[in-house]
Image 1: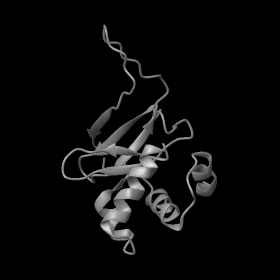
Image 2 (image 1 turned 90 degrees about the vertical axis):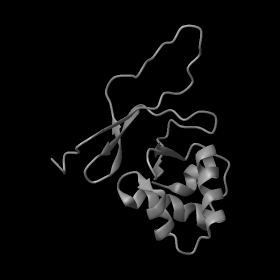
Image 3 (image 1 turned 45 degrees about the vertical axis):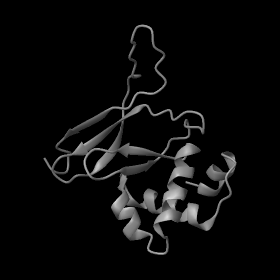
Image 4 (image 1 turned 30 degrees about the horizontal axis):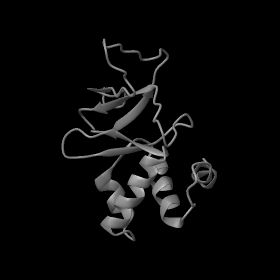
Length: 134
């Protein structure tokens, strides 16, 4: 992925800190727990990391893949996401054995209708045993 182009397309400067956050998450191979992100980015203080994560989420570059339990997981967004709307057509799957969180693409469009409301976002998290742990 060319993170410089992604950041520029979302009117963000491609700072070394932002690029490092994105590359670290991308290299992790699945959604990355905040604690692991914090360990990997030893040259970041907590405030700098927090601000960078929030900016990248606000601009549709990364998203929270899971917030259950004590840990928050972050993943790179698809090219369909924007600053105005995260558009994820996938399910977040958390393995109860290895604790890995993955964005699982689905073939069918997720649609939920509730009378008298306008749904703007649907987030689905499933848990179970992943293929590697079975």
